[in-house]
Length: 440
Ligand SMILES: CC(=O)N[C@H]1[C@@H](OP(=O)(O)OP(=O)(O)OC[C@H]2O[C@@H](n3ccc(=O)[nH]c3=O)[C@H](O)[C@@H]2O)O[C@H](CO)[C@@H](O)[C@@H]1O
Ligand SMILES: C=C(OP(=O)(O)O)C(=O)O
Image (cartoon, rainbow, N blue to C red; front, side):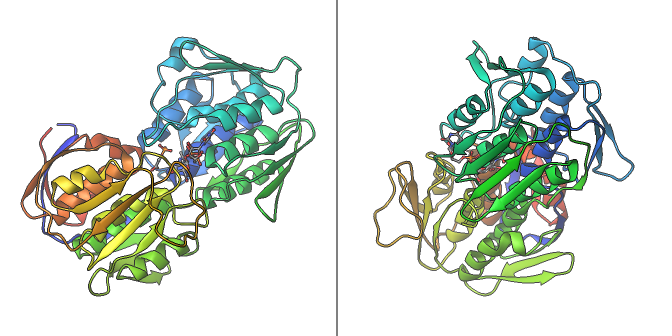
């Protein structure tokens, strides 16, 4: 029994407390940043997630000594013996996470070359890495495609600063530029940068290491390269995506969930939509309490880069919207294939029509992108149990929440994927009173 297949009996509201730790989307990158320092870095509030394990292992095969600190969730990362890893050791990490692409800059600075395995992460679109590779070439790196993965090197010696304009404010490409520019020779100007809170936290951490980074108006980031960086001591920003997931679970199941560690600032946009959808919340010193205010109300949501409504928030919210009193629309503008999870909800009785090329339905806050899709959700529709297979991290979470909202029993397979983004997921479900058995 691994916890990969669950039998879930729905109809019981989720009630209780869950605590969120450091963000998957910061902790993994902070671990990579440790490669840039001369001495040991200490990262606090590291969540126990499979992506963290993948990054830890990839650091270890490159000679970084990773040990647990005394405080739970603390990692000490000692990069004093960084060395090239064997191809087989690197390939063993292929397809497991997207984070290995961020090893490029730090390894080029440390070793003059980098082998990067094929990437993993959620299959929610093509997820190309062209912005990353274009930026790395501008820093002076050469990139060679291998049968599996890529090899980078620095024929001109030290990487140099560059002027980079991202075609889209990509989170990963912005991090790539930051992690490369901090030790490049000269200044880097990055335009159309992503400004997600996790990126701001990465900038803060790099500043602790000795980097000089200024964040200018209009998505411009200036980085003055330095020769050496030291280790950091940093507590990760909380996981706002996990917090938003539990909030939507409270709304969908008509429960009440206190999310310990959640903070208001980073969730302002989510909280506005949550309130408009009929949610109620109370911001407290150590977390946020979520429940319904009354009936769930339909909303129109457009996913977007920060400070917009994050794409990773829409899937659990869609489950709640199946119980709304009317028609909601979710425009997915960030990835080109992020509505697949709705098929399982339709199988469970939801009325969701996906428009794979988006909807031209009047004025929009977010400029239309070619790749967008839209889901029209008409509620309220009672959901009933079904056999469903988890497609990806957030889609999978929404399936579990749908099963908990439904009447009858569901069999949900592939739940292991949730360990990419939800620490102790089954224990948390249990603590909230969910009625389920692990059957595989
Ligand atoms: C580990 C991590 O932090 N993952 C987050 C990160 O993913 P990730 O960093 O992969 O997402 P990006 O912001 O890079 O991707 C946004 C869009 O840009 C496109 N693109 C990106 C890079 C590139 O070289 N070429 C290109 O075309 C992507 O296909 C996508 O359509 O930000 C996403 C958007 O907030 C979140 O959903 C993910 O949870
Ligand atoms: C898309 C996600 O993550 P990743 O980029 O790690 O696949 C996510 O967290 O929803």
